[in-house]
Amino acid sequence: PALSLYSDGAFFLASMFEPQMVGVATCLFSHLRSWLGLVFVTSVCTLSDLAILFCRKNSKPDAVDLLQEVQQGFLSGVEKMPEEAWADYVRRQHTIEECLRHLPTPPPQVHQLKPE
Image 1 (cartoon, rainbow, N blue to C red):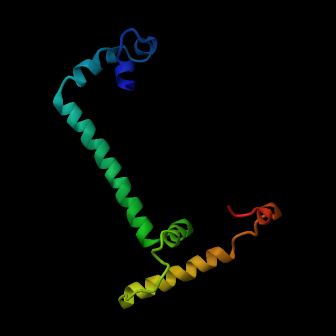
Image 2: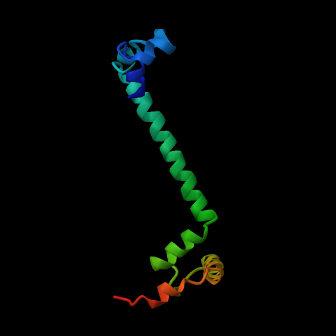
């Protein structure tokens, strides 16, 4: 959208900044290679960001990730696990307990609320 607006001759900024850009969007987006390149580049960038987030979440989870695992029930019970998984389980449980210990106490108004 920005390129088509910027290359439109009726748009006042197109002729002010770079007059040679007028009409480029029509030529560029009329070819299949341009569309494939646009889709390929954006999909590669998105997939690489998702892969980095996945690796970061699995290798070094923060307190939010650990608490989400507890809420979803992944760390709630003891199942048969291999030694490596058990060590990871124990480490995560200790991290969760430390995070919960350092939470601030809720204000008095919260204590007065009744559960529904």
